[in-house]
Image (tube, rainbow, N blue to C red; front, side):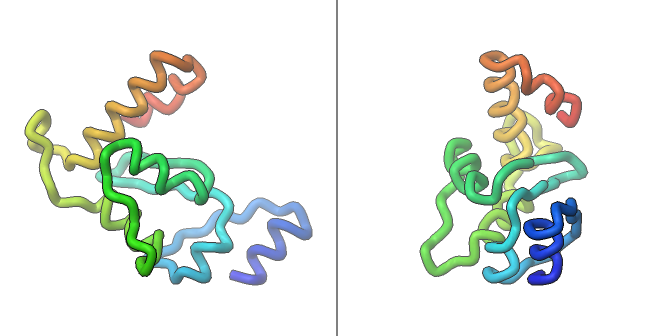
Length: 116
């Protein structure tokens, strides 16, 4: 991860990689993340804002002794089903609602609705 971070920060390169269950140290070196659930984008943005985003959706914040990456993975892989849409997870339905609410306020978010 140090080599990839060096390429991004010191050499101005864009680095895209897939991480499954990153360590706390590896996760801390990321600038932006894209989280997918059920084949759709659940979050794309700054790592530092991901927890706030999911907290705004009603999901619990991660415990101080918990790796934030593990917590985010738990949220997006939730097996709880929505009462409104039984074929979808609660995370998927809540996130989709949030994106639609934002799109009403900011039309620039319309490009994200194509994923939902």
